[in-house]
Length: 158
Image (cartoon, rainbow, N blue to C red; front, side, top):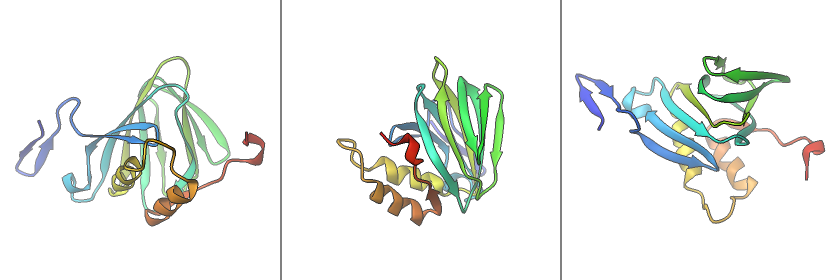
């Protein structure tokens, strides 16, 4: 149960809005309305193989804190192996991607500054789960939130 005391908010273990964002499992712990738009806090829990393609945010800085597991981050043209205890700060306009690697699931906390991008995740989570949405639909929604998605390199096409 969320508790509000004199403007403070307490979110208990497991509470928050759960989203499946095109296969990326998230729990929004604090959203824009909870922090007066200052930041959003999201827990990300995924199995090995789940990842987010190369993209950048024009409007938010993003900070990842790895709680469990192993995550491979691409930051620009560099690759970083992040294990529990690793913090990665990505200022806006920094191209990045990540994939859960290793044998175990990974859990991360993600802070978005300022808040608002959690609305993007919510919108994407509402797309049909019966069949994957078209890339054109995802791109159209992304542009509205200042997200630039990069195409996969030709060499990785199936």
